[in-house]
Length: 160
Ligand SMILES: [Zn+2]
Image (tube, rainbow, N blue to C red):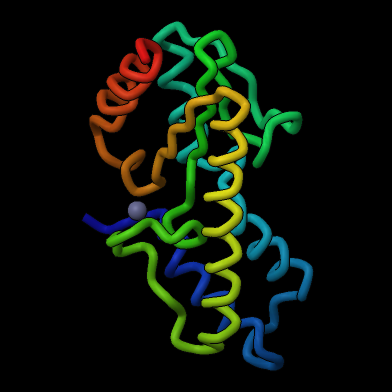
């Protein structure tokens, strides 16, 4: 099945097309494509998770800046913070979308290392504040029955 939302592939496109004279696209258009791919906020995967939670009767806050890492979805009464993570940027382990661009590898590995370190730090800080953290991966959200494991995880953490 072809994948319509492979950030990884899009990103490699951007990093090559951004070279001068390779493309006629205005810089601003290229930049906004990059910015869009950087964040999963309000992206397809996040919206899909939000819709599923909403129809299952959950009430939640979005992008709560008061919490470490600004979790995408916050189930306040259960003290659960959910991040919908892009596999490429957040280096989903063993995932085919977590590829590394072939050019500027030093740049990319430094960037990825920072992202991963920040994720670890945010999770640790949230847990220290009594929050439970769930990471939902973009590639899993594409699966038909992605919601069942998430519901299980929420139930499990709600009991804990
Ligand atoms: Zn993945």
